[in-house]
Length: 343
Image (cartoon, rainbow, N blue to C red; front, side, top):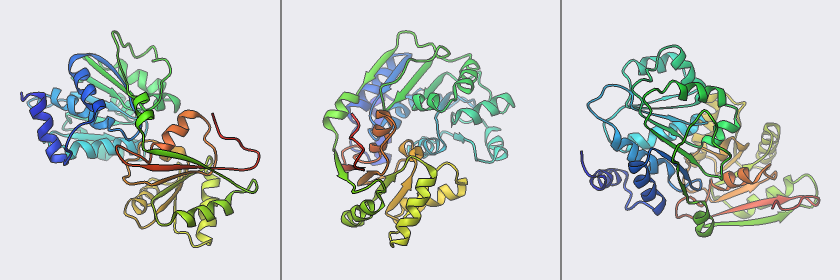
């Protein structure tokens, strides 16, 4: 087996990355040495690579069974992880399983077990119950954004999945926010905690601004703001699906090209919206908090909080769509007369 440095240097060359950041280096060292690791680091700081590098090095290429399982709260995050792993050029197989994807297609992919399996809790649990996934050989478990999976109510599925992993030797948890208590179904003896959230808060390239609206209806204020920002990539966050569609329609009537994105859309519609936003066909994405996690879209310059976030965590994740890695970005909160800045 190559040394960690030689292994890492080879992959970084393929990814065209010059060097790892401090968080990634610390994560690699901890995962190599310790069995239970909790990584707290800001959205966009490179957590995916921080655990994929050491987890991949632990894989035995000679084995034809699944050796590592990554559980994520969303389809978008699962696909992002799959994309990063494939870009690493290891020649090892990864399979992605998630709701909204044809189960028959996944079943065919699982007939030849992947080295790494990534997916959402509900779909993974379904495959395990159907006997499509053999869990006996899985030694490494990653719960990426595990707090979000708990928030979405996946406790039962996660408990079932983890309970089926009889050969588990290493567990890795990640979060972009200070997490709640680790659930009882996930024993984490001698836990090593890596907290890079404070560092991120000190070093972030994010600027936060407020904009006062004349009345409760902020649409005119939003329109003037977008006109002022120009053609830079912008995400507008609303708290409700109906508000997303209303805002999107109103902006289109004002000749502002935009796409909207929320959980009630069919998967094909969601993919089409994100595709147009990624390729620059539309510079404006109007969305719910569905887009606040798991979407890896480069060079987003502005985040507009049309509606105030419901919690500090949501505020953090929304803002995490911009100022990623070493980039800079601006978050703008539109406040009506009776609203006050959170915190």
